[in-house]
Length: 304
Image (cartoon, rainbow, N blue to C red; front, side, top):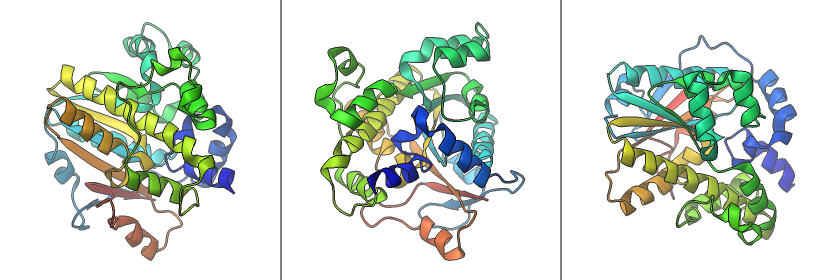
C-alpha cells in the first residue's frame, strides 16, 4: 500500500521525515537500530568502489566546496560519522559552516540566537516547533563551525503540496518557494516512485514528489545564496540519504543553480549506509552505481 511505502521512505531520508506524526515510528526505529558507535566506518570511493581513507575525502574538499552528507535518520553512529567528517575538515584550517535539512530557513534568526546563547535550548526548540527526532542527534552539527543554517522549506507548505498540489498554496506560501522553482529530474522522479513501490508513476503520489522536489530546490537555493556570500567557506549539508543518492535530488539542483549564477561547481557527496542486518551481497549491491544516474556518491561510508 502507498502509506506503507511512505513510512518506509521516512527513515531513508524522504521528505516525510519532519512530520510530527512520525515521532512514535522513529522511537520504534531507534530501539530496533540501537548499537555501539565504537565500530569505525568503512569508507569507499564511490566511483572505483575501492576502500578509501578519510583523508581522500578531506583532500577532495577546498574553500568554496559544498559537501552533502546523506544520513539514515535517528541512528547515533551515523551522526558520529558526520562529526568525524566535520572535525577532519575543520582540522585543515578551512572555515566550515553547516546547513541542515531539519531546520527551516525562515527560522534563521532563531537559530542564530540559539547559537549565540541569546536563548536557551528549551526556548529554541519551542520557537521552531521541533518534533520528530531526538534533538541531541543534531545539536553538535548545528552548533559546529562558523555558522549553522536552516535551509529547508516550512512543513506547512510541503504538507499542502503533498496533499493538494502547488495550485492549493496561498500567495504567502508561494512566496516561500525558491525563485524559479524546478521539479526534480526524470530519473530522480522514477526512483522516487520505485521507492514507493510503484515501477511507474501514479497520480496519487505525484504531489508527494513535487513536495520532495520543493525541499530539494529550496535547500539548493539556500546553499547557493550562502556560497555567494561566503566563497571561502566549506558548506556541509546534513540531509536525508534519499536526497543525496546518485546525485539526482539535492546535488542536481545545486549544480543547476550554481550554473545559473556562473559559480564554480565544487560538490562532494557522501552517502551513509547502515549495514546492520544486511548480507554481504546486500552491502555490495548498495555500493553499485545506477545505470541511469551514475555512482551512488563520491564517497560511501558504511557503519553497523
